Length: 363
Image (cartoon, rainbow, N blue to C red):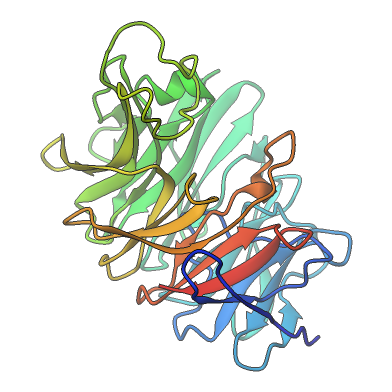
């Protein structure tokens, strides 16, 4: 089906923004850490429920033709991940009982795995080279991080936890024997041993990023060189009691409360220390495939899509998402920006024209 793109100029930057999907039915970009572009940048893979069910679609940025890639199943809309090395897209079914893959340009969906015992609670995440897949499975109150070579299709449990949820598995670039995990949950887990690392030589995963009780960490992902992990890091400089945010989610950089500082952290895994921290009112940092740009969403101007130089911390607003937040602040109202592999474009979600839709802007 052909969908004519919407064109507009961003009111803050003046840059030309392209809406790829119609604003009359929900669609969204892949989750912030998942690049939705194919390797040649021609196609963008996204979940949509224009048929009434969440399914995986592909948009041709040249012809504006949209084609459904998944067939016969409803997908978990935030379980979709495209690998640029192979142009394969991986996704889980909405019930978390199956993992599928489909080639983003050729189609032909393939059932990879039936989940025995429990359900998937995370995105099935490929490594950048497209040789392994990792996910988290829940069975009762227990959580299991699993890793599977795509050549054998035989998963192994790499970390287990009774009653404590782990999520966001992220395989280290160039090293499928190392997987980043996060201890999941709302605010308490963000302030206490959030980032964990599994290495085959260790067996179980271990916490790696020390967090005094006055800091909060989240939205972590590998930089492409595999040495550093980028995340947001929120510091309470007064270090006394609960901050003015109630000890919960920080609300932004507030000049009336200088003790609160939100920024982007680059944690050196090899040295076990924070290498750089730059003050920025931003979340969901996501690096481009070449590592030269990190894009983020934030609070000012209205949900700004911001790009950062990861070495200097210099920032520039690319565009504004202008999200209309619903009362439940659901994930469909989060921009979740992801840059193209070459760092020239950014895909993100916005509902400022109606339903949530996929937008692309130049960086």
